[in-house]
Amino acid sequence: MRDYERYDYLYAAIKKRSSVRLKDCYGAFGWEVLSRAEDDRYDDVLNVAFRRPHAIEHKDELQLMQVYMESALNDLGKTERYAHKKTFFAVLGACLFTMGLIAAGICLLLFFNGTPSLICSVVAFSLAVSAAVTLGILSHKLYKREDEVAKEKAKRAIDEIGDICKRAAALTENDDA
Image 1 (cartoon, rainbow, N blue to C red):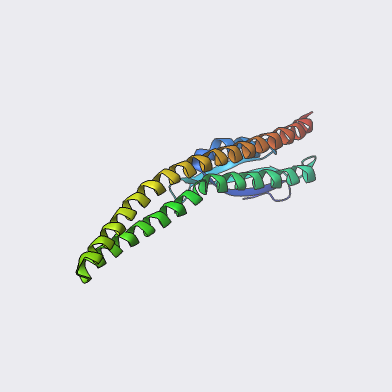
Image 2 (cartoon, helix red, strand yellow; image 1 turned 90 degrees about the vertical axis):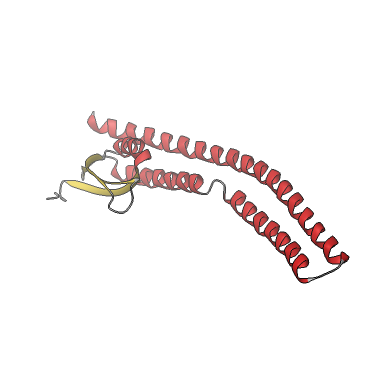
């Protein structure tokens, strides 16, 4: 049974790989873990219940900082999830373009007779090969660039989360004094 007069409660679904970091982060805001349970749907998710005293000092400041921390956590998650989005679409487009050239070459060979269709199909196949190689190299460079940008964004988000948690811990440590 929950005691809503003395405690506030928070429920979160978190990735298992982030559970220790998030437990520490929420702990800096005065939250303590009540329960942890595996998620019924997802193997890599934990459902965690937290509580903290309702009458905690600096509550408004802590809540505002917690919003900032959760926003930074969401930014970090998006950065990790969509780190190579441009590369994905570039490779997809390159594959479709290359397959289109190959299909054009095959159609020219199957449905048209004569030297011009043979020359055009060879050109289409050659363009497909050169496009695949060129786009493969460009995609690799794009991947590296996106990876660097994502790592920098992730580092900034992690630093911001750390700073916010340190400030929150300073406020909650003052509560104990």
